[in-house]
Structure formats: C-alpha cells, structure tokens
Length: 168
Image (tube, rainbow, N blue to C red; front, side, top):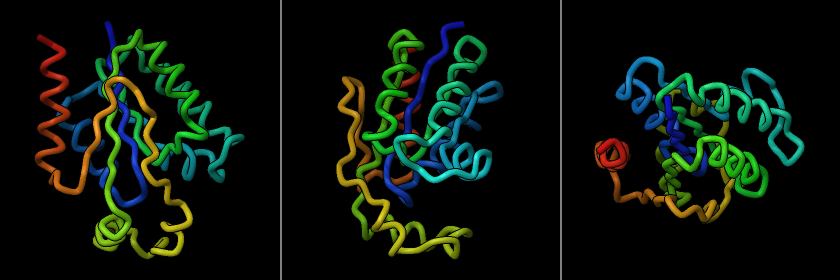
C-alpha cells in the first residue's frame, strides 16, 4: 500500500482538529490521525519546544501508519522552528506522497472560534497570544493556505478534491 501523508497545521483555534477528525471519518476506517495535542499533552504530558520528545513519537506513529493506512493525517500547531525536520523526514518516508495545509487565520478569529469550543475554559486569549506563530509556513511545494474565508465545508471540499485528483 502506498500511503499518503496529510499535514494540517496552524495556530490554536484555527479549526485544524475539527477538520482533521472529520477528514478521518470521511476517508474511512484505517485512516490514522496523529494529533499533536493528544501525543504531546495527553500521552506524554510535556511542554512544546525543540527538545520535546513528543516530536519523535509523532514521527514514529505517523511512520508506523506508512504502508498500513491509506492515509496518515498529522495535525497540530507544530511550529515550523521545532517540527520542520520531522515533516521533512515524513515526506521523504512517504516518498513525496503528501498534502499540506496551513490554516492562516487572523488572531481575533482564532480567539472567536476557540470561545465556541467546549474546552475553552482550559486556556484563553492570553495563552493563545503567547503561542501565536504568524505566517508559520513550512514552505513546501504542495503547501496550501487556508484562510478565514474558507468555511468548514469549503476546507473539506478542497482537501477531498486534492486527494481525489491524486487518485486519478
């Protein structure tokens, strides 16, 4: 099986996790979702940064899915300065079979979106501002930018269209 890697990145509150989970359901059984929040905050309970051991675990989990899952989705804030090497390794491991999306949503909109989530009490605007990475692109050939003008349905259609185009 020639697995495909789907990278979904952006700031907190941009909508990445919502899209990634819906995409996993839409693509069906056997689609592996590697969520930065789950691996870093829940599984390993570590702070983010260059020496964060969750980065290697994310790479290993995604690598495990290569050849076992048709699609492997890696989603999270995944700051370029700390996660770029991981993504380069994964893209190489997947023989260049990847799709990449960066959610470039303005700060005010991410705060608004965050405040509609059930876990909005866990952190707020102050923390989001501290974590903010402006225009944090990976600068990959296939990296597409998702802006605030894209609603949920449009984002899903863009990603699914890209995937279906590659199938043909």
